[in-house]
Image (cartoon, rainbow over all chains, first blue to last red; front, side, top):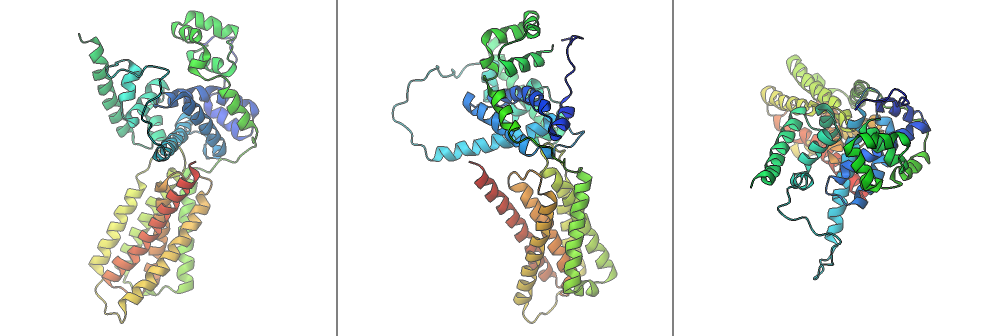
Length: 184
Length: 252
């Protein structure tokens, strides 16, 4: 989509990060406005509830703030931010696991606000949810967030080859899942 | 206005400005998003809340130096720890070694140290390009063991257990001191999980092993392979446990 000429110039993320490291308030505004929706989208797609996704966005932004000195000019900003976001996701998973050990199952389930997703649901969201975590996160980073292979590899601490392989497997699984919808 | 900027504008303000409204009229996807309300895409006030938290403590920070400078810093710490320890305790092992063994052992230790020093800074910087340096370190340690097997013999010791225990304790302390120095260089990094601290322990343990190679005059195969190598394992294990413990206590 073309950008209108009258629109004010928004600095790129790397420039904003440098300004943020220098303590520029406007850079914080622009960075949060750009990154928070992306992070929310990333966490929402990872089987997190809305509240959990919000918490994780906040936690990620706080961690980004505390370790902002570890960003070096010239490095890809998204890979750095998503590297931290993955740490937050792993910690949230461990927290859920630990909390789960102290929970007691009830005999009668409460009424649900929403009907559970049917097993044969073949919408894209349902198919994404069926993917293993590592494949889903690669697909989201590449296809939803628009990150390059190199950036995804850096964010996930994998080699580019491993990212390609995970993406390929995810596409195959998605194609198979979505294919059931068009079959009679 | 692009679609991404449209979403950012929605999330930042909640109320779309005229520019965003005109974009929504042209773009079907953004129009649908606007009609479903901003809360569907980005919870209201999330960006405002985050912004307020960050501004509370906003001050200039000094970025970390590049990977090359950090690796050089680690190598300097290793060299200083090994050299200072050997100078204090005496380089008796160095004097016992012949020229070829010295060259082979020191080269393999240097290669292992180089591998660790390349890999370790990348472990504590989020989004850094991964490095295979630690595999180089493992390969170099295997070469070290092969050189010991090929060049050393068996030595009759009066009390092999006592001599071994002394070397193990000395190597562990030496390695731990080196690991502390390494942590000093990389203390501003992001130590998440046990793998980074285990690698820091391995690097420190290498310092202990190199120190023992310089200091210990016992050129017995099993003494070196068991007692000296155990010092590396102990410091690596201690590093991994420290990292896991810190991680466990930090995660709410």
